[in-house]
Length: 423
Ligand code: GDP
Image (cartoon, rainbow, N blue to C red):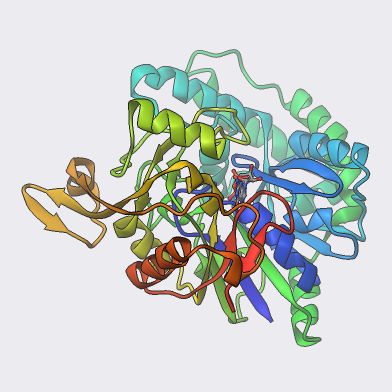
């Protein structure tokens, strides 16, 4: 069975925690896009872990994890993340982690360029995480960067690295007026942080294809959500990769395979990191209360997230572009403090009420139309469908109908068992 777990909203839906839960029933977890620009927070019996590059299955004994060819990998960050996991008693070995020889290396100068550009933009900044993701994906498509497989024969790459660095300095030194990148330092960086991964690098496409033939359960784990997808998201306030389920087999390295399931992770309210249109946004005390209740601070950056009520317009669009076959609704417990639950049911643009997610100028000008559903009190202790209060069941049924997809799981807390199966 091939299953993608993807975000329906702006990211931070709690995908990590759902993958952690669902990986119990699967053999392999694959990351297929992005880099260390976002983070999953997973709480389990071993502790609390923030995962930026590692698939969430790394926290489960017996699960094999794959970093696919669609990813961009900052080697230094990978070393740090592996070290923190090992300190927490998690095994990171070539048996538990396989890295695609076709994944792209995110270099120190990619991070540098990200920072130089954000600083240049100053007040007009995009809200980049400054982790080099846009510059490294740009170079991937320019075909001027190293791939993980190049580390297997690193010394033979010295001339290639020198050529790339010379080209980069046209931008770094001549463009931004920064001191030049030095090829020798890049080679040293690659030796220090790249060579430890040599035994982990392999043809993961072949590994996954054979595993699929053997009928093993494979989970494709997305980072960020539908609205951050480079093609379908709120461009240009998107990530630089494809976050949608349809890309999962490509970015994982098994393009000929068809997904059996696309599980959309959808949050019971909305949150958004960084700049860009966020129509359902709350402000002032209302925002503060929800942010505190949901602990809405970025896992990778610690930045306070923007928050709002559940957005039917954006979420229905997210469910559609993700091709969801089912939904896991997360963080329902966070709404326990509310007497009535705000839901953004439509947008108003140029005096017109719309329910299809707009783009461009119309999205920027959209205003939310809010309605209220009855509150349901504390649901954090519920573990079975029968234990959920009637009002909570009504809210879930309302959301299912609004987005047009069945809700199969409802998560009511960050712990591994704090989840209600709805079937
Ligand atoms: P991801 O990138 O989609 O995995 O999302 P994040 O890791 O940024 O955000 C999820 C956060 O919410 C983490 O701190 C989780 O431990 C927490 N979380 C996940 N599901 C629930 C839930 O149902 N209730 C509560 N209260 N917290 C949750």
